[in-house]
Length: 145
Image 1 (cartoon, rainbow, N blue to C red):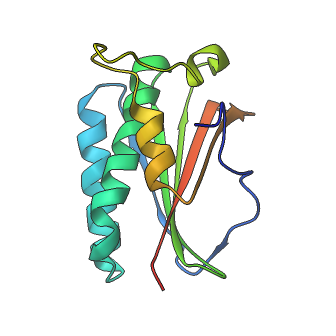
Image 2: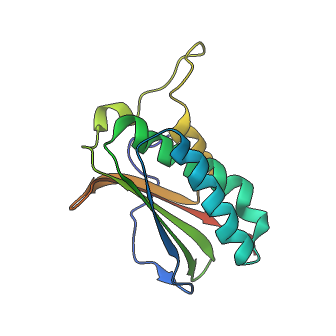
Image 3: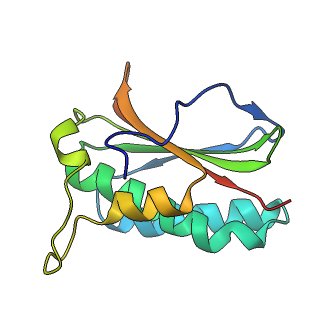
């Protein structure tokens, strides 16, 4: 797993204006985010991406809640280009903890595998300081051609 990102965020061309959600800093926010992604993708006629996108957004929002500061902001957009994709942007008001990003959980640990899941399911993802909010995590879940 890369220490910070699979790719740079780069420009995203969106075909859908997307939607934004402000979530409280509670663990239930991950469930709320998964439901928002489910509704968004089904509304676009892309139920094929729901399972992967729900896992990724759940991990990103849970990390923002556990390691960041509330509130948590979630932006969803459908990007077009060479490969259409769901774009997830999660911002929180905490400081990014770079030393915690590339740690590997041992076999007995109950946590610490979230970004491994994100790395496996996302076509691209990243984690960086955000100029306004504090921490910015993003991921793109690519559609199959």
